Image 1 (cartoon, rainbow, N blue to C red):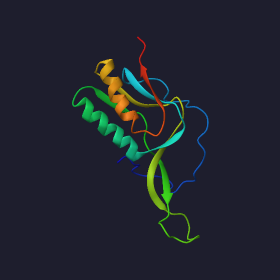
Image 2: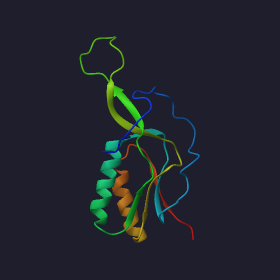
Image 3: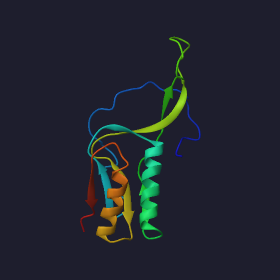
Length: 136
C-alpha cells in the first residue's frame, strides 16, 4: 500500500478540501488521462485497487503513471472506546482530491484500450471521473 516513509507530524487535523485543483490539471506524461470531477478523500487502498485492475487489463502493454500519493494520515479510535483518552491511532492514508486533478495517465496503447482500462479503474473510485486525451 502507498504510505509516506517519514512525516514531520504523525497525526493531522482534518482540514477542509475546497475549490478546484490548481496543479496536476494537465497531462504531463501520457497521451490519455483520468481526471477527477468531485471533491473527496481517495484512500491508499482505492488507488491500489485501481492500479491492480488496470495492470490486469493492460497485461504488459503500455505505461501507467499514478499522479496522486496518499500523504494525509487519518486516525480512528477502536470500537467501544469511551469518550476522552486522546486522538486515535493512524488508521490509513488519503489524498484529498479536488475537481480537475489528473489521477492516472497512460501511454503506449490505443484509445479504446485506454478508455476501457480507465473505466475499470473509475468503477473502484468514490468520485465521478472523465477520460482525457492529449491534443496534438
